Image 1 (tube, rainbow, N blue to C red):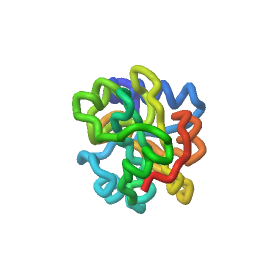
Image 2 (cartoon, helix red, strand yellow; image 1 turned 120 degrees about the horizontal axis):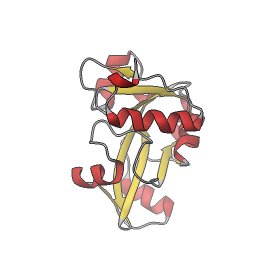
Image 3 (cartoon, one colour; image 1 turned 90 degrees about the vertical axis):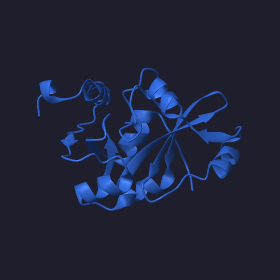
Image 4 (cartoon, helix red, strand yellow; image 1 turned 45 degrees about the horizontal axis):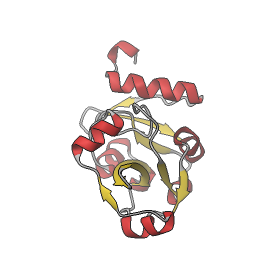
Length: 159
């Protein structure tokens, strides 16, 4: 796929991947994969191997949680582990403002500014992960170590 065929949000993600030395070959899906279950079905992988990018609001700023598609984030327990105030799901407007991407297609990178990131420790049980590439139709593969390095994330239990 050439860069002329990619959405501008994909290009920002591709630039960050290239800077991080991560191959990140994009897969453009024929149907939107805006949930972990849809992405897993489209790719033929376990739902747990989908690295969901969930944006929350905590202490008046965004918090990106990269969680396994097999998990729900326990926001109260995570806030306690982090020693932080309440963690609340960000609104669609807050997600777009923080990431430049829309819900269902938020990538772990390619945002206007770096976002504090938590990476679900459970993701390390999969040899290959899949993450959104900036749109609901695009994904890319990477390893757990690449995800942590790419995001500068803190590895934590999130469920």
